[in-house]
Amino acid sequence: MATIVDIKEEKALEVKNFEFTYAGADEPNIKKLTMPIAKHNITALIGPSGCGKTTLLRSFNRMHDLYPANRYSGEIIFKDRNILTKNEDLIKLRTQIGMIFQKPTAFPMSIFDNVAYGLRLQGVKNKTELQGRVKKALQDAAIWQEVKDRLGHDANGLSGGQQQRLCIARAIAVEPEVLLFDEPTSALDPISTAGIEELIVGLKERVSIIIVTHNMQQAARVSDYTGFMYLGELVELGRTEELFVTPKERLTEEYITGKFG
Amino acid sequence: MNSLIDKVFANTTKLIAISVLLLVAWIFGVLFEHSLKSIEAFGFSFLTETKWAPNLEKFGALPAIYGSVVSTFLAMILAVPIAIGVAIFLSEIAHAKIKTPIGVSIELLAAIPSVIYGMWGLFYFVPIIRDIFGGVGISMLTAGVVLSIMILPFMAAVTRDAMNTTPDILKESAYALGGTKWDIIKDIIIPYAKAGIIGSFILALGRAIGETMAVTFVMGNVHKISTDLTQPATSIPVTLANEFAEADTELYFSSLFELSLLLLIISFTIISIAKFYFLRRKRIGQ
Image (cartoon, rainbow over all chains, first blue to last red; front, side, top):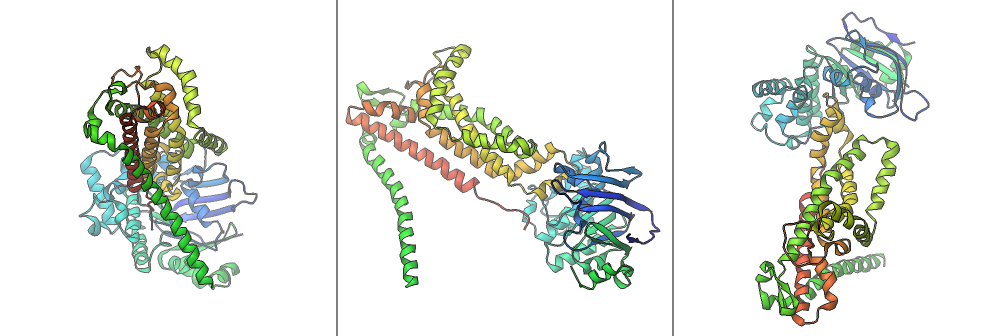
């Protein structure tokens, strides 16, 4: 059984006995996983490729439902309800649980329209309100100064790091309660990476954050809690400073000291 | 020794490639040479004259140009919305189980020789158009309908391919913001694939404007400009196909060549626009 540290904070999400099998696969990719996620903290998910960390992350906003024939069971509790049920409103869920991807994904539209996109989907039409909220989101994502004079320009003209911050602005503009980061800096240079990490840390006052990373230093730098996954199971969830210094499980220790990976 | 083989190989391929260009230039040259008589005789008025009277040695291309433009325009109006609908269905909505069979059948339809569309149009569509809209059935409208059916499979297939180039991660990003399938189609996929879609339309337009066999059967070859679409008409390729065999004077012969030169220039222009402005691949997220 997994070693799970006692979480004192309120919980943003709770995974209970979650099992996930991809379409066409015989073996489940995630096996009977149970894991709490602390509110207003950053939880990092680490583990070797294929351990199921990204699969788990994409379950929180039901991304898997975009593709047919994936099977899953168990519960993910969010705001006192199980979000894995059939009658869950996915459109609403995804405005409450936002996501940032491995690569910057600026939409084929202007910088302003990119950030306004989620707001418009929610029916915000008032121009002043849109302008105000777009500006606020861009400021919070620390990119306002760089783009304020060219909000009408094509967003694809921005650099990779700027685009990723734009994607963060786009995600926080709709004021989600949870943000999922799927290896958000894997396509970026070290300087852009540092900027994104600083930004993520700054966001946790407002949102609960889960970040999947293949980079253990990154997990150590930004997160409060770290979960180590291996072969579809959670091996250990602990406070980050403890997990990296005094891991309770032998498997965790072997992984963080680089014996396998 | 090896470098010599390389050199020979490189130069041979270069020669072959250049010969293709020479071939195009040659075609242009021949068409132009044979058109000279007509160009000298009529000058620019060839393009604006509405009379085509071989017995009077009077040749004006306007009815044929008008017919080409209008029949193609009709075909596009009918085919574009259906092609977009089919492409959206195939790329975003259809279940994997029916996606492949329908996709393959559409590609097969695109391979049907145009003469078959022509025959089918003559025996099937001409009576229908006659019954519904009046006239003799052989008409501009029938030509437009047959043309639209002919270009539809190609347009739908290429539009689907263009839509399929939208990266999954981009679509997922929009879904992750709370978008519906329809939001993603209209805000992400169509804008992303826009250039490819317009390019495919223009290529289809090029094909329609030069199409000969499918419309020769159903258009009528009547050199008259009429706004009544149920009237018979003609287009540049229809005129060429019908009249070359009976061109008994030099000027008649030369006028037909000038028509074909015109068609070549039009097709060339259309395809160049499609290639240079729309069908350049763009990439995202790097």
